[in-house]
Image (tube, rainbow, N blue to C red; front, side, top):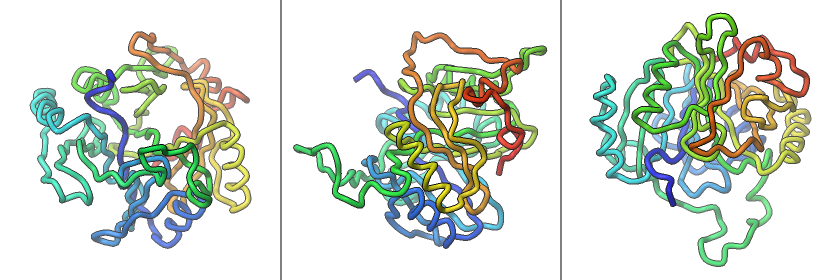
Length: 310
């Protein structure tokens, strides 16, 4: 298989204001599986069809937002190769020993030009998706897929300054593609950048914001657009606050719902989107079509979607 280097977004660590309410939301409503409680009262979750031990970490704090995000890389040699390249780009790299983060190998940690804390790791304990790896079948036992029927962690959108320099890091050092971008129609300045290391429309995205290290949303993949409607029914049933949706993006072409956890962190459930290849040209949207770029079924830009971050 040709996919090497950075493989995928593997872990997002979020601050919540009330852990009890957060566990109800992410566990019972979204349907993620709680796999452990750790140091400092942190709670760890995985989606059912992920093999790695966890993808989401919750920490109770006085303010909402994101502590860090982490990409899994192909192997330990990749970490060794990337460390000097990141430093040559101008970022200080911290080396974190194996075991400091639960069920995880060693990590590299550095702060992006936008202020976000990013980590890279090669190894995390694999606990499986309940199907096994020999004659696994196509669906697990009743109760494994539940709530919003989330398959896996998909991507995150982060806000801050210096997003063009972020994109340079991801393209020049991590070998991502710039799949799509949103620019100002008059100045041509970058407003949002979407980057892919896979065949997905994006694995991470950055939106221009004046303040550093802002968190726009974490997105979870659903199997089908039918599951997006099922999730919408659950969100309505439990009165979960909705930002936008169900709708469809112009950017990525994905079916989407945006909603908030009890602490005000934005979540997304997402399905579909086009297949991206390395030779796919970068798609450019400008602010003359902001409504269609963000929500293509009604072409209405939402102020909250553009301005509310934690």
